[in-house]
Length: 313
Image (cartoon, rainbow, N blue to C red; front, side, top):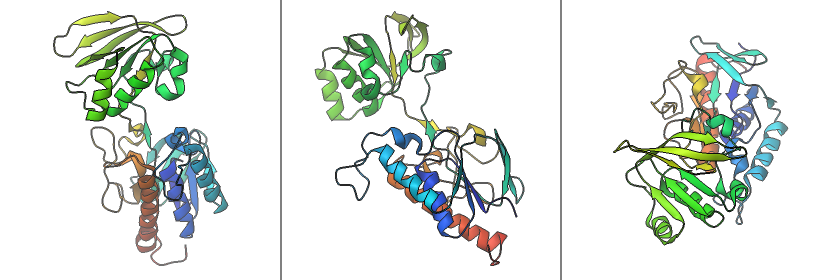
């Protein structure tokens, strides 16, 4: 009936929660994670809304505790990248960069990734001119002229942090309305070294020896081009589901989020999705954990009622 009762793809908070709960149901579980367990939560400095920690807890500490709990249950964790999958038959097949596996049930928990600006040299510049956290990486551009690309409270927050370290900050937003709350908008207006560039996209980035040298902007309404001397770009756009490997396997929205039912089932029988990769996710740690538990419960019900039909698992 397969190598494992259930295969969990993704070792973030949702994936680890699903693996733990599935193991508690008595299922044999394999968790596949391409990089490191914990996902994006690892990089969160303080999680303030997780029950049981009045002073908050770091993402690294929380996910370390979760991994310890998962391993103590006997869940097998392999660091392999999933390259393809076939959900067309009752026995699902998942191929990684090292091996292949078969299983009657799969839980997809691949999470999210940072949305890119769309520059041809963006990945090459990552960490060398294109950054994603003013709090963690702002010290690298102290005294320089930088840009923040994005909208809403997240983009304004990045700009305000950088305004305390940098000589000049351009807040470049593709939207007509910035979309920030009054608190953040008021702080933005009071800042003396932040310039807002609405309805604007970054068309090109010229590389320098160490950081950037300049960026070319294009106004979405007037199509006017403008070159600015900028030494770093901080991307503050909303994240997107990390679901490229799922194309053709399950139904997804235009944005790449996996479409699920009330039991977190996908369009492929025996396949479920949990956490930030699914449509309607709130991107919170608490909801990711809840999703993982719900997906594991649904898998257990599916296996008992439709696969093993009451037989001993």
